[in-house]
Length: 504
Image 1 (cartoon, rainbow, N blue to C red):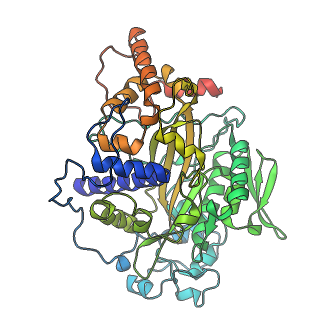
Image 2: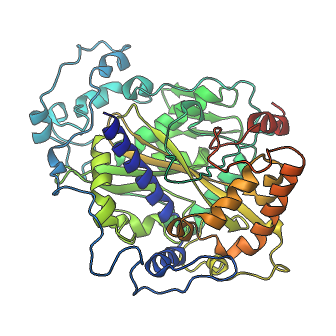
Image 3: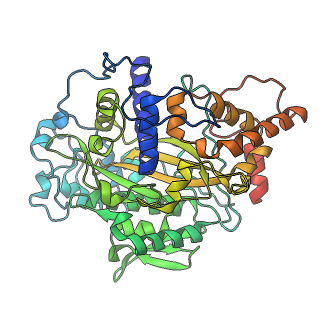
C-alpha cells in the first residue's frame, strides 16, 4: 500500500511539473532541453554551453534511459472510480427512484461519443458518461446540483471577515531542499481552491482585455466538452457563493434562469446567456484546462480551456491534443513519464483533488506571453545591474490544482500566477538562505528547468546579505542546516505577518 501511494504521489508530482514546463516559453523550453543535453556546470557568472547533440554525461551514449513502464496498457477498459451512490443524496429534492447499480460492461458499450453534446444525444437513458451516470440522470440533476455530495469534496467554510479591498494572496513559497526528500504534492485545502485578493477587479479586466485581443489563443472549446465546462463553471460559482457570501450570490427566475450576482464588480451574469468558460472569464481570475476521456482509446485530450497565464504557447496551439502530444517537447517524456501520467489520469478519484506550486524568477510580472513576445529576450542575457535593479525581479508562483469532475469524468487543471517582489524575502525567516542554497547547489537539471540564470547575478548578492542579516539579528539560528521548511509552502510566522499586512 505504501509503495502504491509513493508511486501515485510521484506520478502526480511529475504531472504537475509537466504543467509547469508548459507554462514556460518556447525559448525557455529550448534552453532547458539544450542544457539538459550538454550540462557540465552551472554558475551565475558562466552560463552553460548550449548544444542539442551531446547526451547528458550521466547517461552513457551507448545506454538507453530506464523505462518507467511495463508493456502498454489498454485504457479503453479502465474507468475512474464511480460515485453512483451519491446520486440519491444529490437529488434529494427530486421525486425520483433510488439509484441502481449499473454493470461496467453496459457503460462500456454505451458511452457517450467523444464529440457528442450531452444535451442532444439520442437515447439519454442508456447513454453513459465515464462515471457510470446516464445522460438522463445528468439531466435529472438540473443546474447547480450538489457537486459537494457528487464529488466528495465539501464546499468551503464562509470567510465572513474577508474584505476584498484589503485582501492579499497567501505568501506561497514552494521552495524545497533537497528535492529527493520532499514531495511538492498535497491534498487540496478546499477552503482555498479559488483565492481572491485586492487586485481582483484589475485581474478580471486584464484577462478580458487579453481575450478581446487574442481570442481563441486564450479561450476556446471543442465539441464534447460541454458537460465538463458546465460542471467546472457551476462548481466555481458555488464555491464563490459559499466562501464569500458577502460578495456573491445566485438567484433563479423564470425569465432569466440562474443569475450570478457579483458584489465586487457590481454586475450580474445571466449564466444561460453565454458559454460556461465566458462566465468564468467574467468572474473568476484563474485559468482552467478541461481534459476529456476519449472512449475510443481511454486516453485524455485537451478539449477546452481558459488560459491567460501561459508563456510561449496558447490554447489554440494545444487544443485537441492527447496528453502525450502536449508533452512531446519534454525530454524523455515517452520513456520515463508517459505511462505514469496515463495511469494516473485513468484512476484519479473525484474526492482526491490535489494542490501544488511551481516557481521561477522573472523580470517584471509577465502573465501571458504568446510566441515571439519581446519579453522572452530577457531570458537569454544577464542585463547589467544598472538596467536591472532588484525591484524589477519577482518570484512567480504558479499555484496549481488538479481534480476530476463527478458527472463528465473530465479532469481539470486549474492554476493562478502570483508575483512577489524578491525584496520581500528580506523579512521572511529562512527564505533567503533556502533560496540561496537552491540557486547555488541545486541539481543541474532542476536549475536548468527553473532557468534562473538571467537574474542570479543580481539576486544572489542580495540573498547572501539577507541571510547574514537574519543570522546577525537572531531571526534564524546561525549555521542552521538548510532544508524544506515544516511550514512549506509558507515560512515561520507567515500567517501573523500576512494577516497583519491585510488587516484581518
